[in-house]
Image (cartoon, rainbow, N blue to C red; front, side, top):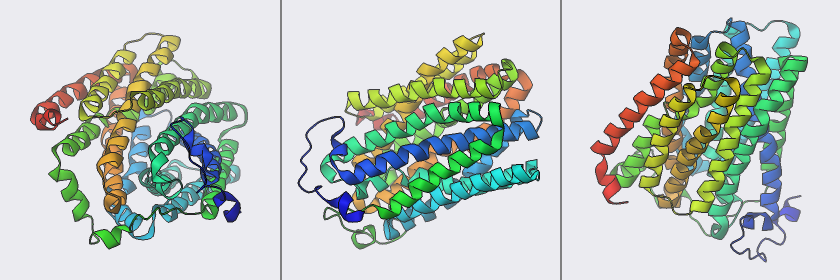
Length: 415
């Protein structure tokens, strides 16, 4: 299988096609299995959220705590993940992450089947799932460098982002309909199976090096070099700061929508799936727009950060379920522009020897808003409603971004 995937790659000379990476058999195999995995991970995430809401009696605070628990491993272990990625290679860590999430899905389905699922057990499994998710989030952009040559790397990274967003479109809806018809168990099984297939395919793909040195050969080991690299560059400091502050809102939009569907609109699991798909339509459009825009700058990232906060606030003011669903589309576009442009900028300016460590730092920054912001949003939603919470939070974070832009305006002057 390895030889079949590797054969013909060196002869391929893709041009500037938007699907240039598909000229390489290894990328085609990666793309098919990754798409399944991304659908599966979103199915597991949606199933877990609905399970926690059911076990907690619909508590937004508990849902927020669950989201925070899932992302604590990335915040705690991010530096270790980055160092190991540059030393051992990102693929091994990605395989470990996919396998961990798959095993958690099977454990959740088994617990439901045996009738032993409780809220404490669900929270423990969410924490273990978070460990796998931490590995996936940090390594997903980096592993592409081992699959395609440098001349199509930007195209492959863009397509990988699109695959992830397609998973976001399909996964929540698939989970919602499965749960509505058959309960949580089958959704967990299907999602876990998809992740397991991806892990297996990753073990079989050939590795490209293209003469790039190992990170531990180019610079001494340790996370301090990556931190100093980020702090030394004003534009990179600004991008990290904007992403961190906007992350209090951007990655939590789906959680807010889940609460709006169940609390404000009484739409149930099907409604959660539909709102997740509406948000995914926006993120897919945002991924495509990122590819069309081409050049990424700190100014464009700042615009996306402020945009996602203001659009989330505006969406919360919409009074009906159909209008709310439509409002999630532009919010999803801005969210994707922020994430995709930020990730692309970090890839562009980071040398290969530090890429695993800097990407791990950026993943930590991107997702730190979930354990910090999600519990607050959950408590606020319980107090004033999910839509009112999004108005208050979106406006407040937009103001905070203005403060960040003023304090780090030197990064914009250099853009």
